[in-house]
Amino acid sequence: MRTAQDVMTPVPSLALTDHLTKARKMLRDDTYRELYVYDGKKRLRGYLDITDALRITDTRSNVTVEGYLKEAPRVAPEDSLEQVARVIREANTDSAAVVGPDGIIMGGVLLSEIFPILITRNEIRGTVADHMTRKVVTCQEGDPVTRIHSLIMESGFTAFPVLRKKKLAGIVSRRDLLNAGRVRKALGQADTIPVEEVMITQIITVAPQERASAAAERLVKHDISRMPVLEGSVLVGIIDRHDVLKGLQVKE
View 1 (cartoon, rainbow, N blue to C red):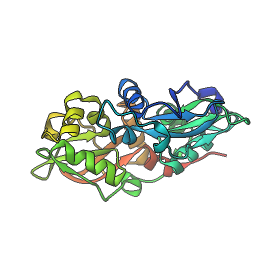
View 2: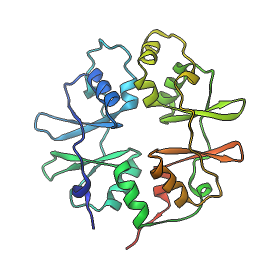
View 3: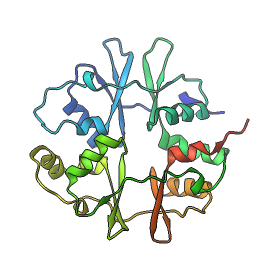
View 4: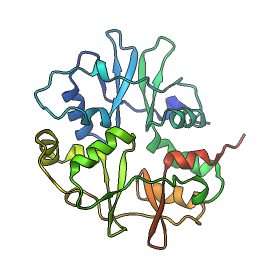
């Protein structure tokens, strides 16, 4: 059976003294949602993510990452992928750090990498309705991106369905805000840019009565982390990889 060390990958890391603006650039230029932070002896001290990077809009800021650290989920090299998934789900992150007995970071395991393996070798119970999040925070296509920035900071959610006359029109994520240069400028200067100019309009959806396993397969096929749930044309929920993991029936 494959373990954490079999699938771990080098994850970009930062020193405690690095500036948050450096972290923002690394998160913008790469596919990672989290960065691990080490001390002078390369021991894991914590992590920060895209939400933290969005907190600083001044590119000249000399704020260091140390003040933004959160406790990092960690696993041992010999832990099974099911154990890794459990740690990631409990931490509500998209990765876990692989740490040796001396506390030194060896690498990271990405949920996006192990998710396809987990859903093929374990049963997923129930329907989408059994696991989806029903209380969905949404926005309107005409809302300013500053509202999305505020929603991310206040709610902790990472993406929001965008509505047009109560119908799903798109989805906008924290990475969309981080990647768009003019948006970063707007956040710093309070300029108004509507959500519709940065949202994604090609949306993959699922119905609440579909099997959770079907939703998992769709997440893998389209390489996405979450999907809106539609009852007809009405938005009734959202389901992501973490929701699917809750329905995982691990084979002994």
